[in-house]
Image (cartoon, rainbow, N blue to C red; front, side, top):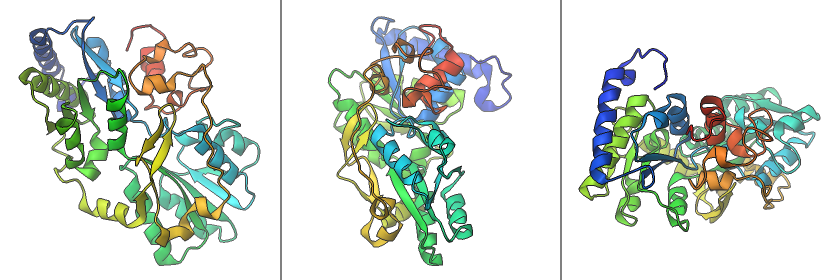
Length: 377
């Protein structure tokens, strides 16, 4: 594990060692080996970051393999959507407000950071309310918030739209790129040749949506999912819980993160999402292609806040560079270091693929904590 001193109950070294011993016993009982491992996929970028940061893959007993799924919302933004966002930002009437990670995601022409260097008014914010403040302070400009993220960030965006309506702020709009988690998991499970034995479920998303939306994973695909926290012992316990289910021959949806995640999620957050957003028929994901009902759009009743209706958005699909293997990494078919660009042409300072941009991307996390050592993840 990470040599940093453990100062909380969730970092206790002795408890971690006991969990690793129990995990090893489970793997041995299942007959798992390095050549035929149990493969568990985390579908949250926060878990990917935690696994790399704390060195959890490196201390796992033989026979267990982590797969790093499409859980980083910045990392799955397709080039076409980045191009549309850059085009909006280059409109001289516009102040484009965005989260910091999204500024560096490469489009086919340039990133938002490059657009800013070329003169576009692109500003980093920490919340959609910051963008609304910009709109209040700049009534002669159009302020567009680049909204992205899974259900975790949807409520704050929805509530900001509702506040803009209450206050009558007419120069505020949302370029909506919010996405949903369960169609993504379904797409992974439906991928040809994809072998996933269980899922470490996203803690932050589940705070909003609860456990019910995951039931299809167990009922239809017969795979277990355990919603997990983000501390080292959270992840280790969730691994043990998944192995326990596999050993008993059952597939259930369990909640390791019960101290934070309620069974039914957050009804107020769900209500705000339902009020402002509707499901898109399909949405394109970088490296994964179009996934049915995997994104949301602004409802007609709030159309005046929809940047896609207010500005000319082309909505074109732009192919990834042939040499970029982000799609294979997102689906768990490839380790970051197996991409020929990793650590050479593609680094956090000069990202070619989106997985190298955000700290929650598998490539960026591996580059930071795993170095260039093959097999380190």
